Length: 193
Ligand SMILES: [Ca+2]
Image (cartoon, rainbow, N blue to C red):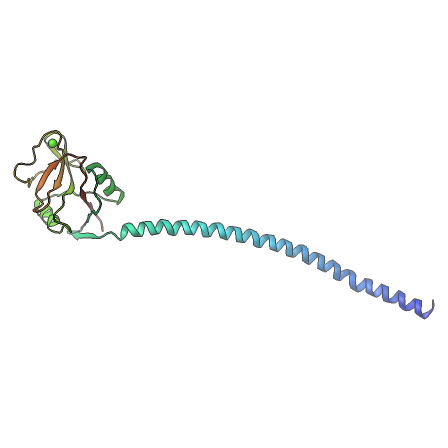
C-alpha cells in the first residue's frame, strides 16, 4: 500500500464514518420535524375550531347583553319593562316570557297606579297581562288568578266577546278592553332583578 492509496482509503473511510451518522441524523430530524409540523397543524386546526366556537359564544353573549341592556324600572322588588315595539296581546305575552318574565300583573291598585305613572310614553296604549277569554271572567295570564280590582275607564270592561284583552289606555292609563289582535306596546314584569 503506497502512501497515496493509504491516504485515499483513510479519507474515504473517515468521510464515510463522519458523514453517515450526519445524514442519518438529518433524515431522522426531517421525519421528526414532519411529525411536529403535523402535530402543530392539528393543534392549529383545534385552536381554529375553538376560536370559531368562542366567536359563536360571544355572539350569543352579545345578544343577551342587548337583552340585559333594556331599561327596567324597579319597584317594590320587581322590575318592569315598557316595550318600544307594538304587537298583538298574545305575542306580547310570549315576548315577556322570552325575557324571563310575564306580561305585567297588578296585585293591587297602587301597583297599577305606580306602573302607569312611570310610562315613558303617555299618549300610547300598553297591553297588560289581563284578559277575559272566558267572557266576563278576567284572569291574569301570569298565574290565571282572577283580578280583584278593576280601574276601568268609564264605559269599558264589558265590551263583549270581541274585546277580550286589557290595556292601559293612553292618557290617564285607566283600563280598557280591546280586541286582542290590535298592535300595541306592552309591559313586562319580572319577580327577581
Ligand atoms: Ca270580553
